Image (cartoon, rainbow, N blue to C red; front, side, top):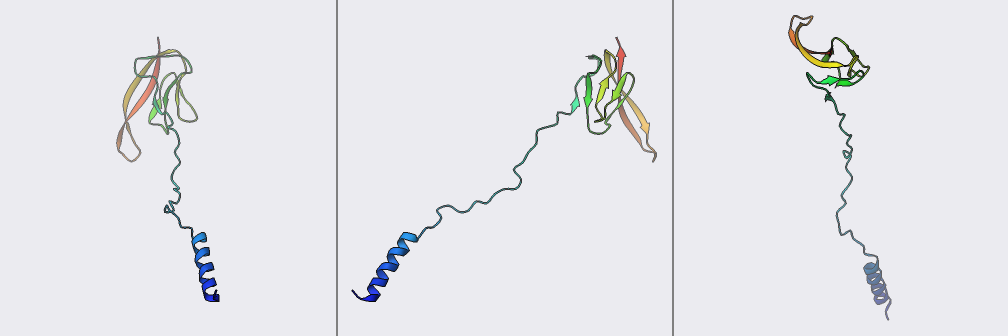
Length: 112
């Protein structure tokens, strides 16, 4: 056998053995696959419903609802009943410092 024939045989054999190609395209990875559960905010005890002392009436971010009589504002702005009684939501028109008027909801608990 001639040297060039040996080389061709070895080259083609090694080329066929070592030839590995991807059969699927590289997909990559996504960076936005994280999600957090909902925070369960909102009104928990509605108007004219009964609340016990310490019950959470509203869970909120900021003061969307303002505390009134017999309720306290928690450090996360939750409104809690101070005494047992009936929940009353009241709307009040408030004038802001720049002259605009805003309707604000005030949460009260009336002793029953």
